[in-house]
Amino acid sequence: MFEQIKQKVEAEGLLIRSAFHTTPDDSMPRLDNAEPAATLLLVGNAGSAMWEAFSRSTEYLDSYPDSLDRWSERLGHRLAQAFGGTAFFPFGGPPFHPFLSWAKCAEPSESSPLGLSLHPEYGLWHAYRFALGLPQRLDLSQQSEGSGVVEIQSESPVSAHPCSGCDDKPCLSACPVGAFTGSEYRHVECAQFLADNAGYECNQLGCGSRRACPVGQDYRYKPEHAQFHMNVFVSNHARKG
Ligand code: B12
Ligand code: SF4
Ligand code: SF4
Picture (cartoon, protein in one colour):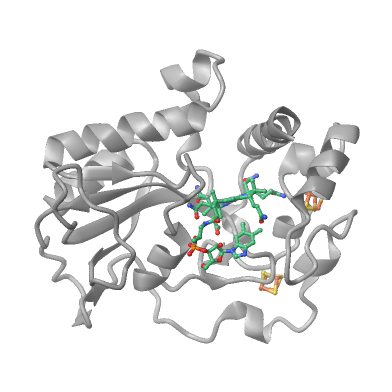
């Protein structure tokens, strides 16, 4: 079953980022049938691999709002129906499902000074589209098992977190409005600056603080993908205040 799900998400340019057997501490929501999920698969993107599939989708082309969320919902619910599980999404709150905490259960990502999680290979250029909760303990035996958590996505051994050896921390000094203080993200200042300076490189190429990080440069989003996210971010801010 794992292989079948993997093939279906890869056809959309997505990855099973991690998979693990849940424990009572995982703040797991219940499946639709009220049973606890035994296995959780986190599905997301690294780099722009999903852009080709998403930018051809009905949701992207119909010009209604929230196209990426609607695309994610369609894929997530379709998989859940096909495999007898329940899909959970990172959006739609508050409250939000704790995707970054779930991710830490089974992949080598760590918090960066930007708040975003930094993956040793993908850097800051990755995100989560949905989680698939399944009632059965899937066989995740490709990798060694420890305390109910199985890591399947990381191919490289976990080493020291890149941020701890990054003395200059260029991510913290790259923002023109100092939006990342190291302890908070002043997103109102960021969004206002982007709205007032539509031609600025963050709007065109993605967040300058993310681009300043040397890790995962090969996974930087391509311009049209980056522009899509930045436009959504700015227009949501204008819409919701
Ligand atoms: C609310 C939210 C925001 C708010 C932030 C509000 C604030 N005051 O900081 C806003 C709307 C501004 C925002 C913006 C962005 N976000 Co955001 N956001 C979320 C969301 C929906 C909820 C976070 C939360 O409260 N979780 C609840 C708690 C309980 O979850 P948790 O996992 O236990 O907690 C973790 C987080 O709180 C995290 N954290 C702590 N401090 C900070 C600070 C920041 C800035 C962030 C992002 C995270 C963060 O550390 C905790 C432990 O791991 C998550 C999705 C999710 N469900 O988690 C995405 C998420 C964190 N965002 C994400 C992204 C990519 C962005 C953007 C970069 C989007 C873009 N443009 O591409 C932008 C940043 C804008 C820019 N300059 O580029 C990704 C991060 C992926 C990654 N690599 O880490 C997530 C996971 C969504 C996803 N689909 O993958 N975001
Ligand atoms: S620039 Fe350095 S400190 Fe900032 S996210 Fe990248 S590795 Fe971490
Ligand atoms: S998008 Fe630009 S203005 Fe906003 S936080 Fe990133 S670097 Fe700063």
